[in-house]
Image (tube, helix red, strand yellow):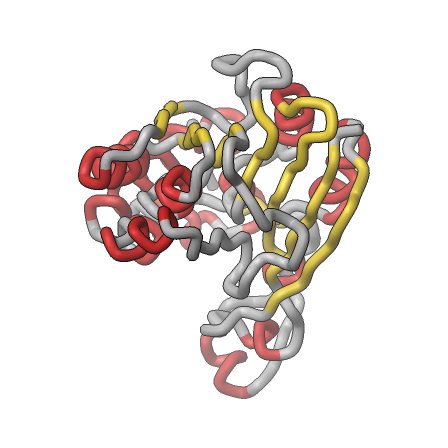
Length: 264
């Protein structure tokens, strides 16, 4: 098995997402001009989970300084910019960021795109943003508490962090498709899960050879407790179901979780 300490997971995951952007995957498919035009007219939505945001989480964005954190791909950031926000999108993948740049150029949007590690936002000053919008992505780094600390630092007082992540229960089950066919959920991996420590050597080497991103399934203590430890106050919590179940557990448990946190 590849040792965690000797494997450059960040470079590997950056390359994996660069490739997905080239392949036009679901999360690398820029929004259409019609969607941008609708956003400019006041009809828009931004999503942390498959369903709409809970009411009151981000009803208006006019004039707000928004950091779209680890959410490039030409989707969320351009819509928020068209709706009137001052938007910066930050992501590890340069090719994902290129999708946002293309939409901005195509539709005449003012939008900044910055490449980097979500755990290090030193490119930005303290209190630089009113909102951090952070859809599911922190499963691509092994430690999330630095992410929350940096989010807290770059938000103004009274600013909000809107984030989403997987219910860690999705990482527990054996992924053998035969169990799924039998309707059996067989626990196999203790939490917190990580590809680099929990997959056997053959499975891990095969995943790396395919160029797939390696993932880390963080505990709720790190996801929610980490936000509280960073200084945030939890103002909202939301659960959502997977509309296209990948694992058997998705049929029984809402496996998308989202939080609305405030910097006091």
